[in-house]
Amino acid sequence: AQSVTQLDSHVSVSEGTPVLLRCNYSSSYSPSLFWYVQHPNKGLQLLLKYTSAATLVKGINGFEAEFKKSETSFHLTKPSAHMSDAAEYFCVVSDAAYKYIFGTGTRLKVLA
Amino acid sequence: DSGVTQTPKHLITATGQRVTLRCSPRSGDLSVYWYQQSLDQGLQFLIQYYNGEERAKGNILERFSAQQFPDLHSELNLSSLELGDSALYFCASREEDFNTGELFFGEGSRLTVL
Image (cartoon, rainbow over all chains, first blue to last red):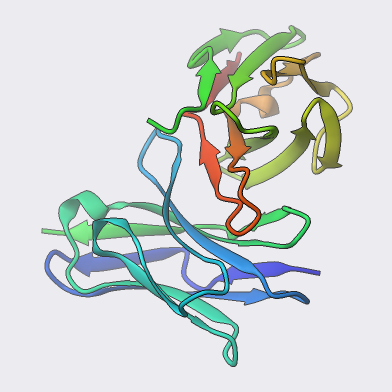
């Protein structure tokens, strides 16, 4: 069975400092992995996706994530946080049957 | 704009009532997924349709039902509403690319049950 764990429910960073949002997954298959962002009262928007190509995946707005099979991790990073990055972030794992498992979310707060 | 359209955006109703939420997927997408998002339970998968047929069921209550029509739009019917049904309901459609399978989300329908 698949599962995904977002290790932090809340993360606070100062503007201009790096962002790290952690995600661990469990999957019996070669999974597809996604990060979505949700701004208040908005739908979820795809940041980036891993689908067994390059292990370092670049997404929108300067975010990237690295797929580490040995650590079963897919952590999301950004070198320098911006105020507009404040939102909730979801890590998602999908299997070959297109069943999507969402993490419980990490709320990112960016301090001025 | 994701290309997924949900109506209505906001809905306020009373306990015991019935409502219908509508979703139009992106052009060319055959799959529709419904999710419920509430403060205490997070994002919960309800049900999935593919080309008019139910494919997977999640934590969907018996008071809730859904269907996907021949034009591929989908409706989620919520009946005998309770206060706890107040939530944001999202619809998503899946990209028909077997290498990625990205989900595209609508803006959601916010349901308030008083």
